[in-house]
Length: 160
Ligand SMILES: Nc1ccn([C@@H]2O[C@H](COP(=O)(O)O)[C@@H](O)[C@H]2O)c(=O)n1
Ligand SMILES: C[C@@]1(CO)OP(=O)(O)OP(=O)(O)OC[C@H]1O
Image 1 (cartoon, rainbow, N blue to C red):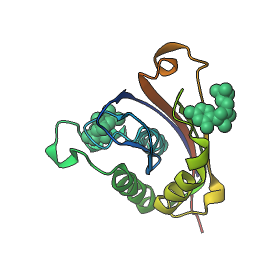
Image 2: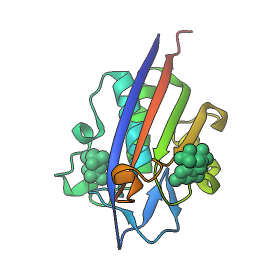
Image 3: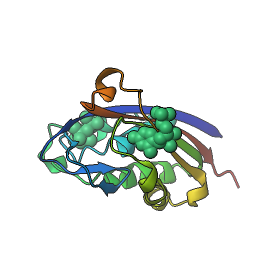
């Protein structure tokens, strides 16, 4: 069986927080605000996988009211979600995602993000595509008030 899912997330950019996107800490004057490490890209990917599995969203599994997830490493959350997919016999077909950010420049960090994501999803990094775009200075992203990310995923159930 083939299942598809999509995910979308937004986090506010504030001073005094690290800028962690796709599991990579990017040097920047601001970082993303959240209950966890606020890794907007990994949250969009997590939601896409949960969507494909028909299992709700990241907040359902890791509530932002639970102190256990304060400053949580989103790589670990993604790995837990991937364990659910594996338990149902799925492998990753492919994953495509977009970071929507006016700043900072993502391009230099994308290969490293793809490696982190591929390791978490136990697949070759050729199955993972990360892109970035600005909003041409329009809207909250364009004013650098926040960063958004979206993702689509294709999961294939191993039916040997
Ligand atoms: N935060 C970002 C945004 C964009 N990029 C790269 O720049 C290219 C041009 O962006 P446009 O929004 O003007 O289309 C884009 O294709 C990305 O390669 C980036 O690295 N970081
Ligand atoms: C990841 C979780 C974990 O508590 O916290 P946040 O970092 O606030 O992220 P968000 O994408 O707003 O919602 C999911 C939360 O449950």
